[in-house]
Length: 235
Image 1 (cartoon, rainbow, N blue to C red):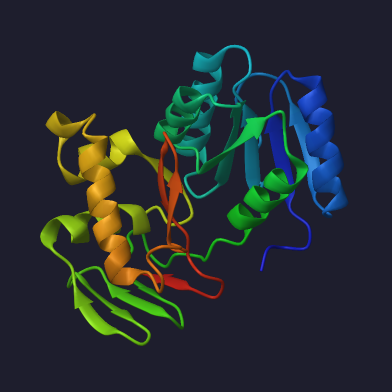
Image 2: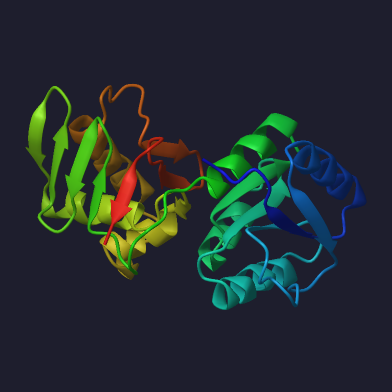
C-alpha cells in the first residue's frame, strides 16, 4: 500500500499544471513542493519527482537523468504533451519510470502516482524471481508457472524480453531500449518483431492473453510489466 503521506517534488514552469498537481496530490494527503527548472538540490526526503517537459525539453530530460543519478530508487514521472510519444520516450530513456499527458487528467495523475508509490520493494540490485497468487516466474531458469495451467518454458528470446521488463517492474520501457537490450543495437526500429514476441510471452504468462494484466502496452512508446497487488520481486 502507498504511504498515507509522501513528499512529492514537481519541477516545471507551467503554473496551471502546477496548480492541478498541488490540488490533486494534497487532496490525496501528500506534501507537494514546487521547484523551477533545474534539478532540485535536496531530494533526501522526497518519494517521487514529477518533471514537466513543457518548454526546454533537453533541459528537462537532463533533470531526469541527473535525478536518476542522485537517487536511483526514487520514482520519477514525466509530464508530456498529449500525443508527444518522442517526449515520453526521451524521458523514459533518461530514467523516468512513467509519464502522464498534459492537459493533466486528475484520475490519470492519481493512478500513476499511487502506482509509483506502491511498487513492491526489490531486495538486491537485480531481480531473479517474481511471485503472486496467480503467477510465479524464475528468471534465472527461464520458467513460469500460471495458476490453472502449470509450468511453461520460455524460449531464450522470450526469457530475455521478460527479464528486461521485470528488471524494471512498474516502469514503462521504451521500444528502443527493449530492442537494444534483447536483440542488440542493430535491431533498433524493429518494433513489429518486438510486438510479436510480447504477444508470445502474453500467451504463456497471462491468465487471459486477450486482456493482459501483466504486460501493458503503451502505444507508440513501449511496454510495462505491472506487478499484481501483493506481488513480490526477489533478487
